[in-house]
Length: 387
Image (cartoon, rainbow, N blue to C red; front, side, top):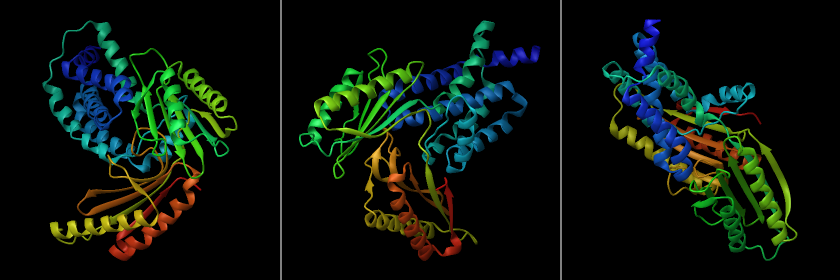
């Protein structure tokens, strides 16, 4: 009992409490409010540091093993290899689990050895027993909070029969209805690019976000709205109903051709091409750089051939609708990246059936080009999701 008490007391260190507070503040206030690259990475840095301290303080004699386990689990979670596990967790859990495949999040991994090293040196504050127990109970909730999926409504509206519903008029309509629900413009691109509204936290209640797209050629409007908390379902339903009623009143003839209300993430299909460079002896810097240039040229050719567009803020190419503020929240994305100098990757992913044909064509094009450039034995392909 003394050992357990001592371990519980050790959680009351200023470093652990500060990291935990930063994690909660970022996930529930800063990220919904700003939703930028900084807030996206801040949770990873604070969460890994706090989680490692949590494990190291409760099991001090195994803190190094715990640190390695956290590194392996986090790296696995951030890759496409975790898709099957996430689907299984969502099927048996009362909440759905989701995460964005973004290997740039691995930049936060140095926080794990740092926390494992500093853990034995920290001196806890003499907090009351009740607060110590509260910290121990709050920590697991904070670590898993951002993996739960919010309530979500998605809809597709046909405006092809409405002559007056041009992009500027539609944009003004969505600006107005978003403002009425406490949402302010966050990614203020035109509807054709994908316009994102986020919750104004100076106002009470309301949905968390709204993303609207206009397909100019097909004359269709796509929107997605999400909400968190106990009133998340009520908030997103009310916003969706106001959109549908308001747009049909302002533009008679608009029809809803698709509507879904769910808690589940979109089913993602992805393909990862891995290029392993020869490592007999030392791999020269010149050889590694030449391989990266070759990969870059292949990606640029594929992007031009298949009409993909480049995101302004991240190294990702995309087509189709936008589902949120992240550069990865698109119908179809292509992302090149390097694991090490000798291991290069290209990932293609789609969220809906709309781009299934283009997705398959891009994959086959990449397979041919990569094999021709690097040799078929150097390139491996892994597909995730079922068609």
